[in-house]
Image 1 (cartoon, one colour):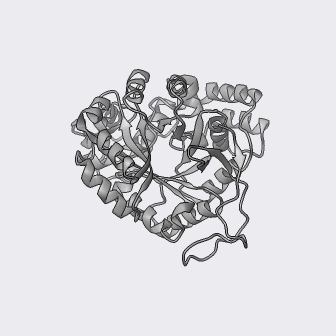
Image 2: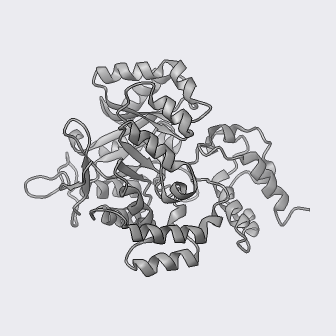
Image 3: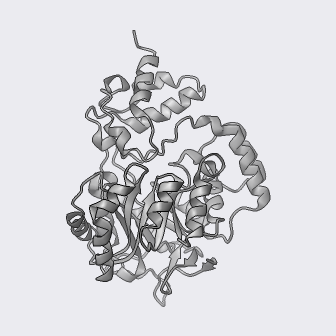
Length: 400
């Protein structure tokens, strides 16, 4: 799949074409595109809608700020918009439907997903998603988050055959799946039917230290275009320790730390779209600039990146990406990702990490965890959350 440039969706006068929308100001970058199927070209940077800006001291989407980000994305040539039934507790799809309805439907491609762990009624979910997104078809539909313990359940449920029927009717254009499974389960699921694409967690840290390279190879061998999630590992690769950041800045002073992660992923030939959950204008501006450039990293750059990894890999004792899947199931309303962040800092020897436990904006604390395991069953990274909550509760400085 070769890279190429294509202007953003524009009128002959150069202003962004919308239906009753105010025109977007500012220059439009030369966004990079890759051909997909059926003469379709997808922007190599996709807009993830799992980490939209939220209102202060809450979880509700800050719609004015989020809308500004979507408008900037459209103005700068991003045409792939990813969401899911469960993102932002069901509000992400609704927001995206509202934010994009002022633009011509053919100017963007919607991707959303069915997650069995949320509900088994896939027919009802699909109809609800069409209403939420204010559309009569989904461009890219995914079986959401297959894992080693769930992939066979999806196959046995009948949902795949149903979504294939919807594809035949034109209500789904392309059918794929997202995976947090191991290579064996991923390969078996990929072989179940003729999928159009697959989505996996892919970033340089997991490439060097995890199994991502093998997962990539399995999909490459099957000719499946790859949609990348977590290219910056939930934001963790945007902020490294001083030694690692100094090494990267010495090599390329003008590059942001996060852009190293994006450049690495977009260097891989089987990658079709790189999703980024951009929650601020500054983030999307930096990412758009990165994806306005051709190519990715040189071999020398990759060597430097590996050296940087060796300097900071101790920061990540547990692989939490702050996806928040665990939050909706916790009966004690513990802000789990925030505590896992502090756990990583604590294990990395960061001074004062444990003292910050009492500063987390959370109704429940690690000491309130009852060990029910609901969070663990929803965790794509298979983190032993109850055990970590117990350890944090025991290590808390105010514990008597």
